[in-house]
Image 1 (spheres, each protein chain N blue to C red):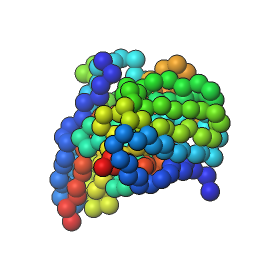
Image 2 (cartoon, rainbow over the protein chains, first blue to last red; image 1 turned 90 degrees about the vertical axis):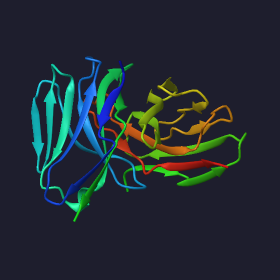
Image 3 (tube, chains in turn yellow, green; image 1 turned 180 degrees about the vertical axis):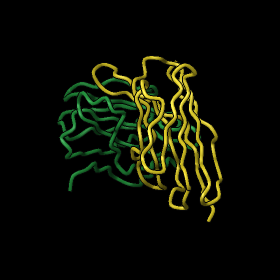
Image 4 (cartoon, one colour; image 1 turned 120 degrees about the horizontal axis):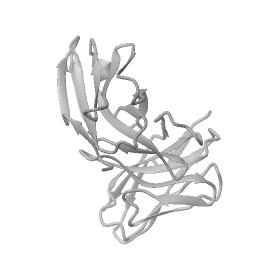
Length: 114
Length: 114
């Protein structure tokens, strides 16, 4: 119920291509769905997030698509660049005992080949 | 400089020893979290705290302990009862009442048990 399943585990994309990472969840109590980007040796940082009443959110080259009925959401990176090479985590958030509680997916290591 | 400071960055420990990881923040955030990161498993929640002198167990609290005596500080002790403590540990914070899915992460502490 609390799990968020993420795929693929790793992804290689050519420069200029589209990178797509998918996530699925079970618990309908989640009320926010963020994506985090992590570079080696650093902590994750918020990239983009979406509420479940919105089907798509775009920020620059990054787009989240959200399918509430299927309980799935995905990250699309358009015109992928070598600087996008990082590990990406999807997450689902809910309020639990007064605090935000985030459940993370397993992560996707993205490599953009020049 | 505002932010989250985790120390030490690298730590080596012999089996059977307890070790304490430090997390200090000057963002004036109420909520603080500890996550453990292992390859292929994403980030898993160990403990979180909404206010001083109060904290809740996360999904993998066994073998860990925390304290929250000050708003700025949330140290994590990895005890000898933790069966597989080698991992990358991440501290995070967020504003009380936030519902955006955003956590602010430190740069992590890598613990290796020899």
